[in-house]
Every structure is written in structure tokens, then in C-alpha cells.
Image (cartoon, rainbow, N blue to C red; front, top):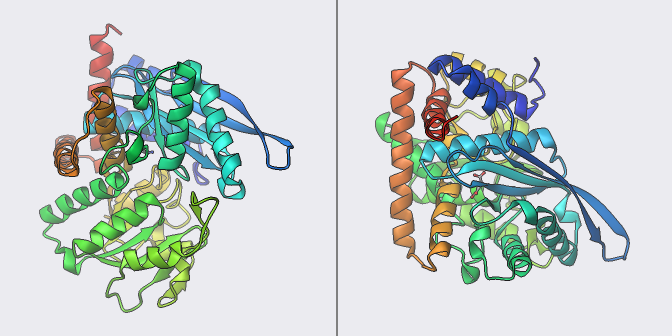
Length: 426
Ligand code: GLU
């Protein structure tokens, strides 16, 4: 079973295997969790600007409903495929259980390069996808959210489309919406903020001083940018950042200002303001590095915040970080995970580290269901409570079972998921 090139679902199942062995999970529970409850595979036809029709492939995987309605983002990316969406839905199930919010996991995706679409085409695609999913989603059934290449504007169109089809205002159908249309304060930066809370907690235990801690971040989208910005403010030294096109490295290791980089990059907006053509490389004061070089830079904390399978058996032996904080979903392959563990590199797993996003999505959903608006202070305070509880729970399980943090988080989650299955009479 080679996962060298990273079949994400195979990686996810290897993680499940390992956790199941460590906690002695009953085989019938494991068997249920080895496949999703429902797979939705749809064609999404769009009439393009030039009046030609283009058919895109879209997926939604609803993994497990034991703990509540399913929840997870929708991504627009050319490499979206069913194996990937299945894995991402599985990780959402684990993640929601790690932070203790009442959802099963789901994920969706459309195989498309959204940056090649016009604003109108992008809106049509978003609305069409919701039309296709309508029979199987709902505020008490499946609640989508943003993910790679999707954002608040797209969530606004999706919530509007669903509301029209349902014949009633239904803001709780989607989270990560614009603030003016039922979005929550603090949602935009929640994944980055939650990641920083986890890193702070880790540094405190290990007596690492943020001001002396160098951080390399792969990915400068919503998650990478907001994490870098908040970490920089908290005193950490951000010495390199990157995007698909490549990255920049501060050779003096003094730390760069992510807001300045973002400003330079945003000088090049496109597609009716939905996407940015600019890149971090527009900032010329630093040395250019490829993504491959960036991942191998010596640093204290490496933060993959882009897509899956960035740390694999091909580069695991050359990673020179002390800690890997996984803000992307599934950035480390199962083989690489073993190699890093053997080398004593600590991995703070995705299902804990990036759970801040879905946690504030939960708060947004609660606000929508009750027609409330919470102030940002309340959102951030509650986020800190959930993240700290998940961090402590993960460390506790890892200690009790003498295992790594990923398996600790899985044990915490699987205990909750199978507890709900048992209580329902499985
Ligand atoms: N896409 C995000 C994730 O991977 C957020 C999902 C959500 O808010 O439902 O966790």
C-alpha cells in the first residue's frame, strides 16, 4: 500500500488503523468509519461568457451523522477528486469531535480552476452547485463553509441560492458568510487565530519564547495570511512565506511583516475583486525560494497552510523544523508522519491545529439559528475555551496511550464518535 504520492483517503485510513490499534477500537465501529455515509457526485453545468456550456464535476461527501448534522467546507481547485474529498470529510468528522462541537464531517469540492473564470461564471458555478446539492443539504443536515479558493463572497451567493430554493431566509445553511448577511465576527481569521492559540499553548509548555521562535509558513491564503499576521503581532519571527508560485525568505532571520506583504500583493486584484492575481513574491525585499526549498528551511516551527501531501517520504528526511503545526488539512503523508516522529520532530496535527475555523463556524450557525450577533470579544473568548479544551484533551490522550499527538487527537475524537454511535444503539 504505497502512499508515497499521497492518495489522501489511503493516508486517512492509515491514521484510522493506527488509532484503532492503539485504543483497541471494536472492529464493527472501525468498519463503519472506513467508508462515508453518503457520496454525492454531480455535474455542474455553467453557461460561460461566450455562451458555450461547460460541465464541471462536483462532489459532496457526508461522512458520519452520529454526533449531529454534517459540516465542512467546499473547495474550488483543479485537482479536486473523490478520494481527496472523502479524506477531507473524514478529517472534518475527527476535527469536530476533537473540539467537541455537535457535527459529523463533510466536505465538498468542484474540479475547476476558479481563477480562470469571470466573476459571473464563478457566481453561476457557485449557485449551480448549491442547486445540485439542495436535496441533500440543510441547516440541520449539512452545512457547507469556505475552504481552498472559496470565500465569504461565494458563501453569500450560496446562502442566497439556498434561501431562494427553500423559499425562506436560511442563513444557517452556510457559514463563513459576509458580515452583512449573517456572517460572524471573527470567522474570517478564526483558523489562523485558533492555530496561534494552539502554538502559544505548546510554546508555554515547552518554555519556547515567541520572540526567539522562527516560523516558516507555506500558503498565504486566508489561513496562512491570518496566522502569519497574528503570530507576527504576538512576537514570533515569520522568516518565510509562500504561495503556489513560490515564496520569500528573510535571510537575516529578523522576521517580516505579513501585512506589508499582503498590501503589496493586493495591489493586483482581479475577477471582480474575488481573487488576487498578485503573490507574496511581489514583495522584492527578500530572497525568492521555491515551495520545495521553503519546506526544508531550518526553523523552529514549520506551518503548512496550503493543501495535502506537502511533506511526504520524498522530503521528510530534509525537514529541519522542530515542530510542524498543520494548518492545512492532511499536509503530511502517513509515511512522512512516521519519519518525522522517528526524527523527534513534533507534529501538531491538523484536526487540532486548524479546528478554529469550524469552531467559529459553529458559533456563526448558533447565532443564525437564534438571530443573534455576538461581539468579536465573545467569539474569541469562546474560541479560546474550545481550543484550550481540545489541546488539553489531545495531550492527555497522547500521554495516557503513550502515543503521538495525532493519534492522541484521534483517540479523543473516536471515543466521542463511537460513544454517540453506541448511545444511538449501534
Ligand atoms: N474548511 C474549513 C476546514 O477545513 C472550515 C470548515 C467549516 O467551517 O465548516 O476546517
